[in-house]
Amino acid sequence: MALLGSFIDVRTIASQASDATATYAHGLPAAPDFVIIHGTSSASGVSSNAMALPRYAADATNVSLFGVGLASGPLKVAAVVAHSIIR
Image (cartoon, rainbow, N blue to C red; front, side, top):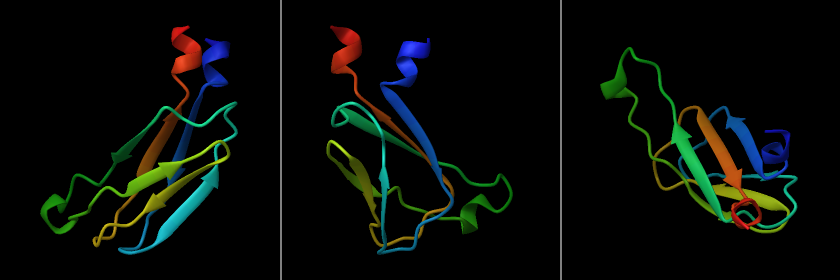
């Protein structure tokens, strides 16, 4: 399991404005093969907490999240270098 920690990077993003960009350095040994974005919201008032999951771009050093017109609440972002695990 310790080996997987070097190929999976999980971050929590507090929130993102509607047309904002958020970038963070992932620390993985290569560009992520895929990025999973999970939006979280409180159970109360779900209908008033409309949010859109951002689009992303990733390279060998960074993951960038791009707003798509709606603000988002808390996000969990997992960047994965899967091809090194599968081999």
